[in-house]
Image 1 (cartoon, rainbow, N blue to C red):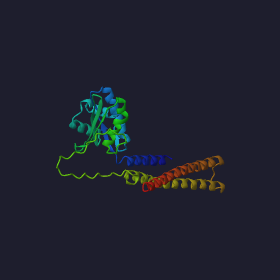
Image 2: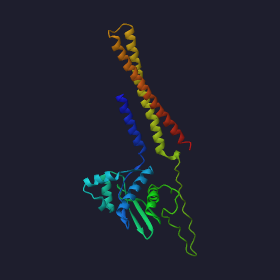
Image 3: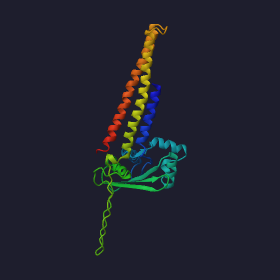
Image 4: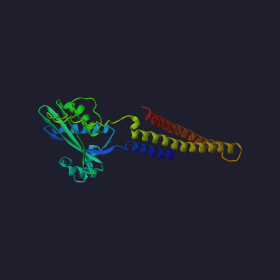
Length: 282
């Protein structure tokens, strides 16, 4: 049983690594408040972290953990706004990219802007912005989601007026018409999602291997319990009945437990096979 528990923990770790293999590790700095109170900015920053994590494309460092690591290295998060500081912080945190931005208010309009900085190259790889003539409450439920989807390069969630949209330029009178640039269509269907395929295929392989190993161990216990029974009834041992019966039951119960675990492993393999097949159907 101890050996199986180790195998199961290893398989769970492998599955977790597989699921997150394509995700980008990021840390999100608190949004800089411009015309907004700092408490509201902190709340919106935390919601943005949650929304980025919910896209499934980012592994987000917890704010508390990020603050502890940076303070240990003598960094003050509130004083880190330049790209150089962001890149240095990202290297200390061990993430691939950093997210920073601002939240402000002009008149009745709240505005949020953010940028994704690649730690290794120092490049700004993506930017996002959204304006909302609304109450601060709506920023939590609408604007943070819009920013997260823009940074993840996902299609809008159907809410209009959240993302900044640049209108097409109007040609001057007499100027030659310019053909519109083709829009690249991104297919988010299951069959093109390599992460799901790898996950289901890993579950299939892990279930088969674990099931086979556990089945062999269970069969060994069954053989040993049968041997104990045969030796006793054929008079090949001097053990008393109670000791012999206890030894027999230990082996038999161990075999039953392993058979149950074997069935679970084969069930995991079956689920992986079905899931892998489904990715080619829809």
